[in-house]
Image (tube, rainbow, N blue to C red; front, side):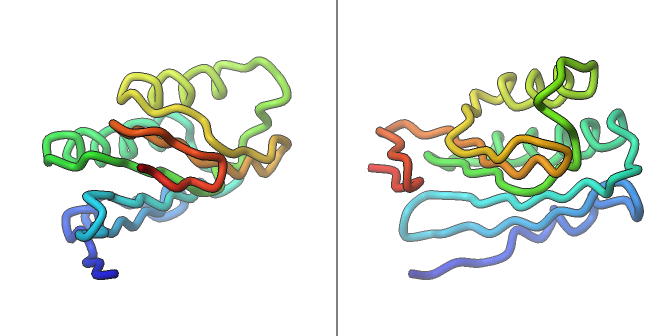
Length: 123
């Protein structure tokens, strides 16, 4: 399996707000984006930077997109923070395939033109 870093993602992180990296898995027409939001990170800044990354990625011809990470938000409660993040992901056609809710919300969202299985294997 051959993969290469998506360079423009390196321009987007903001210290103490959001960290990101992404790779293009060329053999599978897949991009994997890893994101982290520090516990005291500003949700508006986070959403803006992740939106910028997803916008650029969406303009490429990737058939599959996987976004995974830890956003330090409590998704067990209804909050503006939760709604903003979920709306952002939905706006790019990304759907939850895995999550561990709580204060340290670990998740993955996936958009695929094929079937997405629980083990993230896209056909």
